[in-house]
Length: 67
Image 1 (cartoon, rainbow, N blue to C red):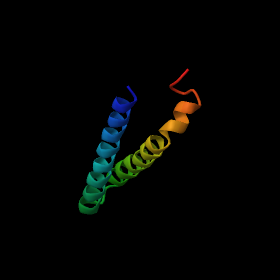
Image 2 (tube, rainbow, N blue to C red):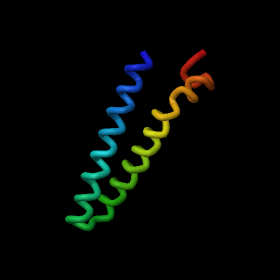
Image 3 (spheres, rainbow, N blue to C red):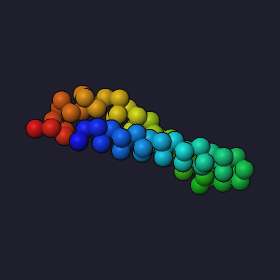
Image 4 (spheres, rainbow, N blue to C red):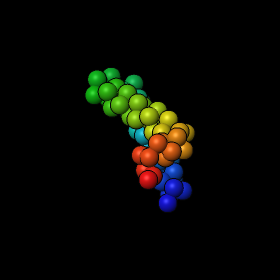
């Protein structure tokens, strides 16, 4: 079950990173504030998910997902 969770989080990280890049490219082409905001939000989500995946054992040890 933990392996599937790691795969799911890794997939979410990849999606967020791609959305960050796509939003940044669209912002460069169109210079709309919405594209920049989208890019920043997904960039932050990418970093937060990467932090979570890297420290998953610590989160599991604190009882967030475990007993």
